Amino acid sequence: MHIMKSVIFVRHAKSSWDDPSLDDEERPLNKRGKKSAPLMGKVLRSKNEFPEIIVTSQAKRAYDTALILAEEIGYPVEKIITDKVLYMPSPENVLKVMEKYLISHKKIMLVSHNPGITEFVNLLTGAGIDNIPTCGIVRVDFNETDFQKGLKGDLIYFEYPKKYKKSSG
Image (cartoon, rainbow, N blue to C red):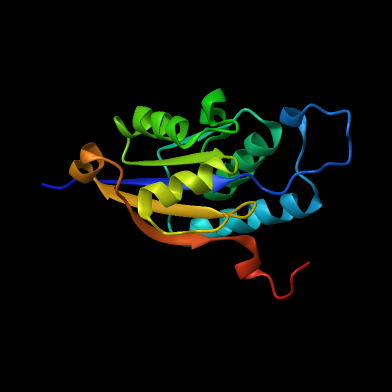
């Protein structure tokens, strides 16, 4: 019997550089980010994507993205988990977090940063994605035995805000 596991990888929504005195981790979402996150939450809901657990980097822009997505898909926001390992991660660190939560869950969402998240998705799937844009979402599925044998997953979809905008603005 094959057990399928799914990971929904999310790059945080667009953040603001308006206040140069802010620590990188404290940068908030900008206007575009605040529009993109609910839009992508609706896309997830239309795909019936309801992760059992959402784990995010503690950076404000990532946490706020996770919060907005959670609200859109009806995930209890108080159950969002922050994990410092997802802040500016290496692909190895993304793997550690993924493995930690996939042990006990079938579908998880990880909200993180580039370049680590794009590199990791490409390692996992061989998709050759140049760049997961801000608020981009990639779902990767594996059957459990493949996952245990090493990094190999199937790219199910790659969604991002510009796909849904009439004009780029």
